[in-house]
Amino acid sequence: MIKSKIKLSKNALIILENRYLIKNNKGKVIEKPEDLFRRVAKNIAQADAKYKGDIKKTEQEFYNLMASLDFLPNSPTLLNAGRKLQQLAACFVLPIKDDIDSIFKTLHHAALIHKTGAGTGFNFSNLRPKGDVIESSGFTSGPVSFMKIFDAATEQIKLGGTLRGANMGILNVNHPDIEDFITVKSKENVLTNFNVSVAITDKFIEAIKKGKSYNLVNPRTKKAAKKESSRRIFRLICEQAWLNGDPGVIFIDRINEFNPTPKLGAIESTDSCGEQPLLPYESCNLGSINLSNIAENKRINFEKLKKIIHTAVHFLDNVIDMCEYPLKENKKIVHKNRKIGLGVMGFADMLVKLGIAYDSEQGLKTAEELMKFISKEASAASLELAGKRGTFPSWGKSIYNKKIELRNATRTTIAPTGTISIIADVSSGIEPLFALSYARKTAEGKTLAYFDKNLKKALIENRLYNDETIEKINKEGSVQNIPEIPEKLKKIFVVGSDIAPEWHVKMQAAFQKYVDNGISKTVTLPKDATVEDVEKIFKMAYELGCKGISVYRYGSREGQVIYLSSKRDEQITLSGFLRK
Image 1 (cartoon, rainbow, N blue to C red):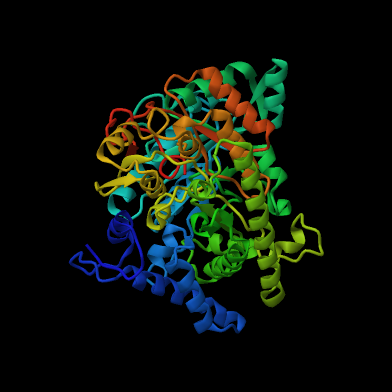
Image 2: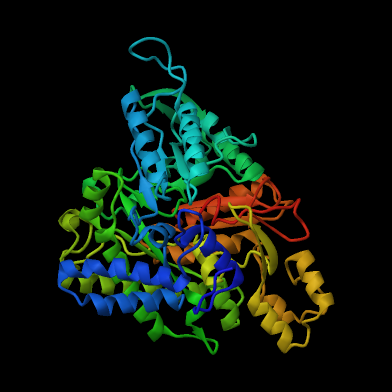
């Protein structure tokens, strides 16, 4: 295995070697982790030349930011910066119009994007429903059939690429084919490269509350095709989500309520993982702050956090200028709006270090306080950059107060941080700890074994780190049913399956108050959860101000990438892979 001067876990080194470090034509790794961070820092700092900045100084700041694991950018930046491809963004949305030329043009564009390791989101609602007339002759097969074509193309690109391509497929709740869409993944191995979400409107929610029917509208004629029971369709969504985690829901009216540039058009879709609403052809680059590194002596070091935020915003703004976008349409709108998505990872680890339970009022209060600070400082950093570099060009068409001249139309997003959280050796995004001991299978077939390092330290301090206790934790993945573990540790070391579902939703809502874009978060449910439980979660998410929500019931889907080391038959999703 490669060696590194930077303090990295064994799992981090495996991931870096398999996916990110440069290899020669014989497949041998010829780059060390410190070389990777230097490559990326040097490349991204070059954008300062455009603004007459100190490139050498910026390069060192960026290097220190990543080498300390205080912040890491999204995977395409780590992989491609300073290399031939130079495509640095993770999130893309592409439009689909109701004609064959548009459909296959978009498929071609998606292939070009997937080739770079990024994901794509689509809203298929413009396509006429199954059985509708085609002008030339015959009848259309509907949006679901075209999704399957997109899925097959993604599969082939995935087989040959370093990073897997992924898609988000969205259909509006008032589309005549909504029932087919909701149930499309009820069988295994269908649309395996897609997350699917139903775009739910405020009117649909009101219809559910009042028990009223609503209209399904043909997108070709713009006329009502039939009436449907809102409660029946909502129940069907919940039944399918209970069955295997799909579909999720996005609250499309709320997303557009916070659309920063409404004069440029409405938002119809998110990226492949659901956290980044974008306009057609728009793209966004993301990066995440390692919150575990700012918890010191049971306190949050806000001064350190402030410095990280300002350097990270500088970094992400530079990425926009250094990125070689796959399509000219991407470059045009990205440079108009200059959206960035600064997020977090290691939140659960930070709470452990602070001695705060995830599922507690103090946990929610900490989340709000933290994200409010990050949002405020990210905007301050964007304001400072605007003074030096100018506002984003479409700023005049935005919803902002004209006195607030920002560089970036959005500043914050909470992404899943699937592989970058492995590199940083912390919990993903704002998810609770997945388990305290588990194994994870990578796309390359490697198995990564985990035992929570903070728990190990606590067990040693309490003289409980012995073979018997470790074996029990390996078996359970949790400490809640282990008698010898003190209650004070049980309270703090909670994992996803220990937490009541409503705390998952409350936590997402707490962060969403201060996040410009969306949030990647999966509500993990126990195996014996009911469809009614799912209904409550979706309704609660809407009422608390979330922009979307997804659930996963323990053991309800096969072939997942994470599992308790002794319970491989009870595998569970992590939002960093499926609903990122």
